[in-house]
Picture 1: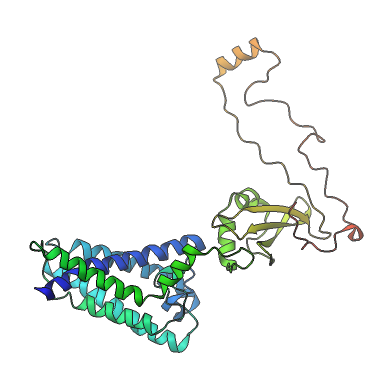
Picture 2 (picture 1 turned 120 degrees about the vertical axis):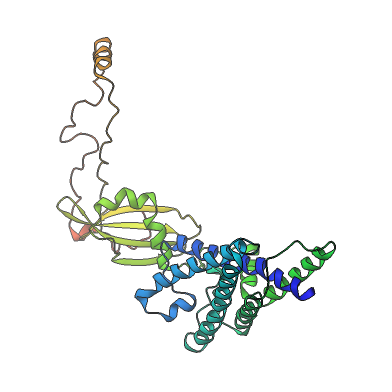
Length: 337
């Protein structure tokens, strides 16, 4: 009876770990824009295959986690339950072999099991955890449908589950990383933020959508960091003039503050932003428009209005002086206009 209880506890435990790993990987993907597959066993694959493999791993963990819960009872039958549990055991067994290979080939890379928390190099703790989870998953194969425990046994099951959770926590380097992040806020000047994350946050921002029409390419020509800011330069075009769009991304928040400036490509002098395209105005039905116009002759009809003159407000008077002698010494002054 005790052995059956231990096997029944493994089903919700394995399902929780699989779904938790899937959610943490998806969160990392959303923060990075797209999964680059740079962490975990996906680093063993060629660069072009890392993103598809990372997405397939998330889908597999999600399917197995949901399948373990769905086939825990009588739903799906015995064959479906054995298939899901065997797939879970094989997944952890393959993960153990992949981590063993990573430790000898790429010892500096984390296992990537729980997204951003799994950055520590693969150690004996990580290998032992994967091996124990594989044994736990394969041990559920002879288990039938999970039934209601007899009176008094739920307390024993909770004790078994608590003991396994403590063991997994001792074998998980992610726990220490999570506690450090909860109790300590690293200064933004010392925070390590990959360039890929900065570019992903920039391309999701309102500043990018507002000025993307001026860019000639979406690949930066220069990137540098000054304390809490990272500056990204893109080539742009303003009429007949070559320009550069400089974005400043603050590195202290998960939703960073972003500023933008446009400078002349030859001199580095700041340029004025062009006027935004006019939005279409709401048009009043024709009879009502004429009634409003008759009552208020000075008011223009909706959707109409006089056009701006060549020198009116919002029009650029042209780029500033392109004399290199008057240009700033360097555009890397840290100033966003």
